[in-house]
Image (cartoon, rainbow, N blue to C red; front, side, top):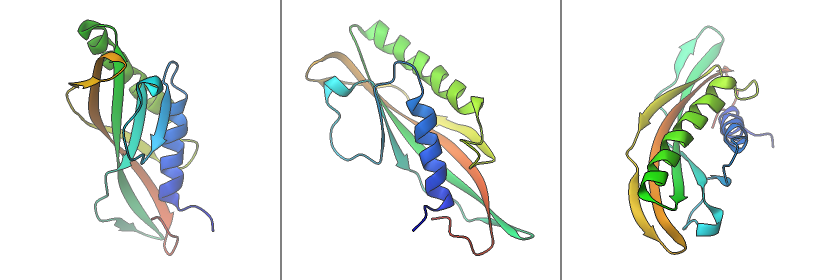
Length: 146
């Protein structure tokens, strides 16, 4: 069975994020802890989507993608700088190709959460933050999206 348009959009998002220089791993819907050896990492989670809008011959969708950033650094200051740099890298990567390889019509930056510092064995300074990006795409009537 072929992937839905929605899953193709999430696959395009993962590919775009995986291309960020210095990014460790990018996961889609990973459960469980991220090991210190796998940092930095991004976990992509499905944030749901509002009701579709119907247009002549097609249906417009918005999928919410939650990006969970896992970052580590030697100091608190370096961790904050890594967070700032990663936000800029994500925005640049997604704005470089808003179609995510021809699957979406647009990607829109949503909310950016604060970096929450936590303890992690093997990482002197560790923090997690959650970002939201909206993926916009249309499908013809009758084509599966989910």
